[in-house]
Length: 251
Image 1 (cartoon, rainbow, N blue to C red):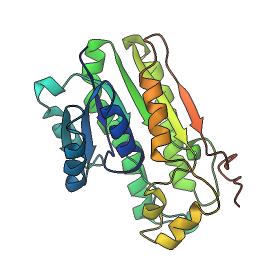
Image 2: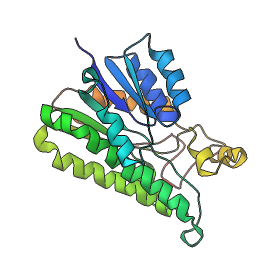
Image 3: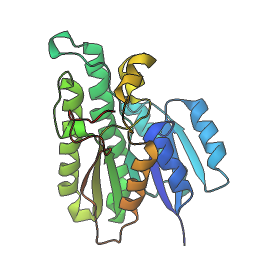
Image 4: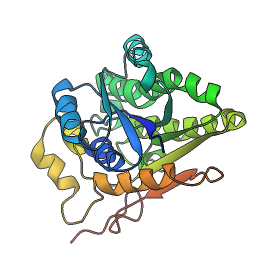
């Protein structure tokens, strides 16, 4: 049976990398996308013995670059059936009155506009084929607002709304749309949020066992391998130690 083609954004670390590794061992050929070309090449080399791999290095914030890179795919890579919108980030953890406009722009440009740019570039083939599956990686921050989360939470609330809107708009074309909203996942997320401050980033996960990228990858694989008549529409996943965005049991 021919393998399905899946495109993963933010594939060079965390959830994206874990998903690439898992899907490579199943019935998928992979288009791996990310800004860090060296990491893309290293990951592609590692997975090449398992499946076909194609890499695209671009910044999802750049609409023209995003569109041209996806349009540049060779003919035998254009028939994308699964899109995993994983690229995203958080910058800063400040009260709104002290927030950095630069941080706000980065979060809205990547988490919201970047997701839209990639989706718009991929959708034509799905619409033409009347099938496909879009997975949007949201966050518990898109379900609950927490102190100092303001713009990050707003960006993830937008992802949740866009996921619901896509599901409605694409229903007539048989395209599945899934939102996966993780709680605390130990990736580079906190290191980026705190501008490389390892000590502060490590405090986020101190005293508990957080989710791993592999945990989310398992859920993505489950969602994209359901029968044609089944869609996992909306999924919130937390580590056992976390009860909500703000309630966490620490040892």
